[in-house]
Length: 160
Image 1 (cartoon, rainbow, N blue to C red):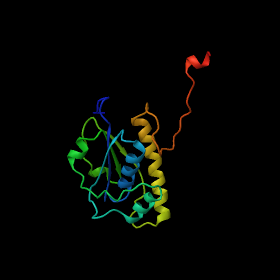
Image 2 (cartoon, rainbow, N blue to C red):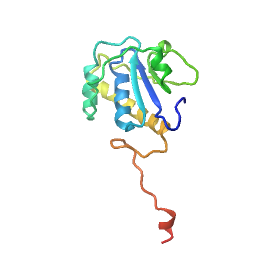
Image 3 (cartoon, rainbow, N blue to C red):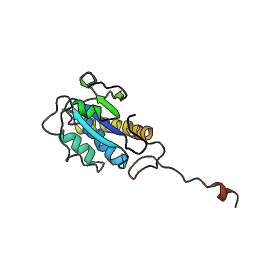
Image 4 (spheres, rainbow, N blue to C red):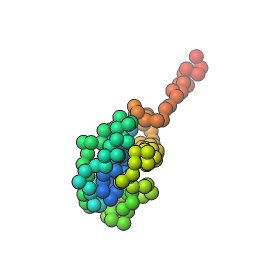
């Protein structure tokens, strides 16, 4: 990764319209990452507005993505990100050496009902949680995450 230990890792989520999948992923990473990861999203052919069903699905989990708007993918966004995650548009994403690229095979929520979008949302959440664990493995879970840690006794406490 191009970030140093003092820097936050940065993640760019990319899908075609930047209105559903990438916005939900960015919303989860902002919420669950607790400020430990810089979050960006973009689309190869951005829509005019966010998918209203994606907004509703995220709102069910008290995550507000309405402040976001679809943005056009450009080379600078890729160049300045450590991890680039594509969702159905990998061939349109510029490739730069030293970047980590992943392609998440996810259904497009465009035109789907809330029940279908919930399944996509939940799949994205699991992937984002795994990404957080991979990028910042030595930090404690932040509020709202699904991971918990049990405090372990210190060596001194064991001998008391």
